[in-house]
Length: 470
Image (cartoon, rainbow, N blue to C red; front, side, top):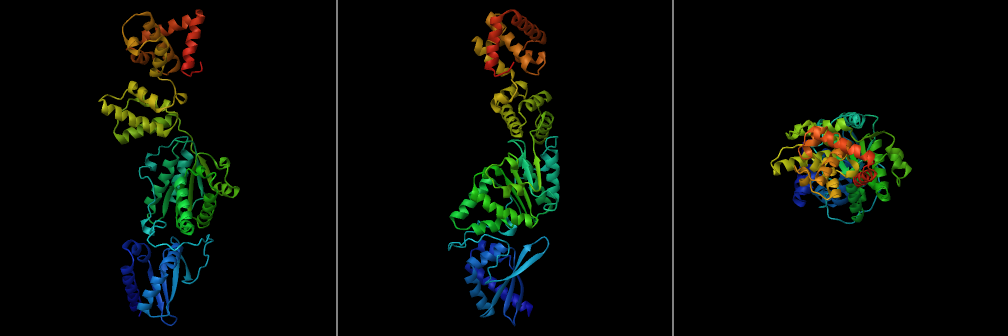
């Protein structure tokens, strides 16, 4: 008899398939599991994958269901749902079709009479796109003193989502320190270990846009229910919600549901919770109840390790002194590091030249703000030549003209004073002179500064133009 009842349900599905689109059928009806049919009470029990699926079926397809059930099972059929509330622990809850029980404290918002073709609010369980960047993994997130704690905790969360004391996991740090990379790495690793988990990465801005659209379409309930089905929710740049009161109120409900049900929450911001002005205390205390970890800007050694790792991955050959120069100059921004390497590669390919210090200095002038980096020889040459009204070609020439020699000597003096380069390297970059020429030039300028007050003031003027505090 059970088989015959199952066959009747299969017949219902065939009729439904003729009356909806293929995508609608796959999303809402194919996942339904026939459980039983009690002939005495004429009750049909179906299992659905979530509360949201139950609500959506009742909202948009109840008329279609009633018609096909009457045709296949006869009249007066009572439809009952078994809702999967926790897939991992096999927890379910039964509810009658006509009931509107508030199973999980959900805001109830009436929806307009819309066509059920709008399926974007809730993708099918198996078809959820996690929106993760697969290139951001733990294998290329290089560990250093500035990120050891958040990296270690992040890996633990990825391997045991929702089962550690680090929930929520709140990561903060300045732009370019690797926050987005780390949260993506957590999500990617979690999906590798638990493919069935519903993992979702979303920027705060996209979340707010989705919420605004849901309000406009009168589908806030759909929006909330969708996010309440996520097993690991990763939200980036939440500082952008500081003045978005309605978005924050909605996220409060989503946060509470996920937290109570042991789902993992990961938040990233450019500042700690205590500095998120404009957010209510009830949210800030929840953000702080798990673990707050700071991602600091990488130090020079970590920058060198990151650059070497990228060079190995991309098959690049960059001299060690160039790597060290970039690491020292890029102000601890991982984005700057990657941008400089990409620019060096492009220059070397287009101009068919080797990657050397000269090319690195040219790229750095365009890639990094002068206030945030050490001076380069090109910076110095540019300012000194402009001051004495000569060209770099004049400086590089073998001419002994007084203005050319003075410009060359002053440039070498500044290079020796404000860069970490040896005299031999400075000489190569300024007219291909040897180290003895650099030493002599610096000595000449230093001696003149001691006895020539007007000259000292002139040198001070050049220093000011370079924005150097001597």
